[in-house]
Amino acid sequence: MIYLQLFLSFFQVGLFSVGGGYAAIPLIQNQVVTMHGWLSMSEFIDLITIAEMTPGPIAINSATFVGIRVGGIPGALIATFGCITPSIILVSLLAYIYFKYKETMFLKNILKCLRPTVVALIAGAGLSILFTVVFKETVSLKSLNGIGLAVFLAALFALRKWRTNPILTMVVCGVVSTVLNLLIPSLF
Image (cartoon, rainbow, N blue to C red; front, side, top):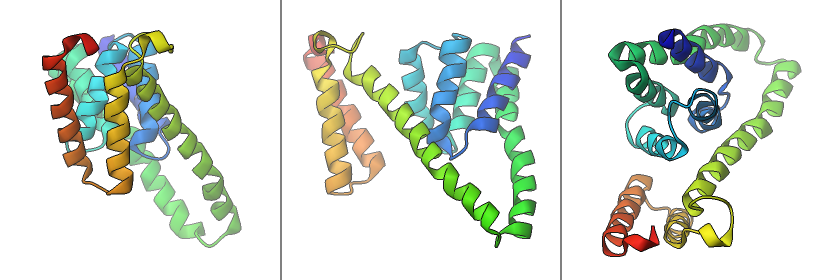
């Protein structure tokens, strides 16, 4: 039964994550944290961090990780297959339709209308993760994680102002956070 749940959950993620990996984050969160409780929100943030740092798409890396966690190696294979099956079907179909009708205004208008939806999905996922990092429990000044906020703002500034390498930025932020956590654990 768990294998069927894994397949169907990640089939939905693969089917409805229009716009790429970041757009899939709220869908993955809904399936693995909210609906099935396979991961806590803290574990989910760790999952996204690892899925982002490892090669490959976020959704597929997440499916593999959750599959192993919930159902071992067979669970990983089934969840990953569930995640890629819609893409195989839809990309084949859309490639055929796109190349046949790419010059029509109807298709151009459809693609134009999907852009704001993708931006909203990415922004929603980003804000959800940001609130979890910046606030320890609930959104209030009392539970504000100052170190988390400072690391976020420093990373954002470095990425936007100096266009630093994202991998280097993640490594530096990880080292800084780890050192601060070891030196002053009460801040975390």
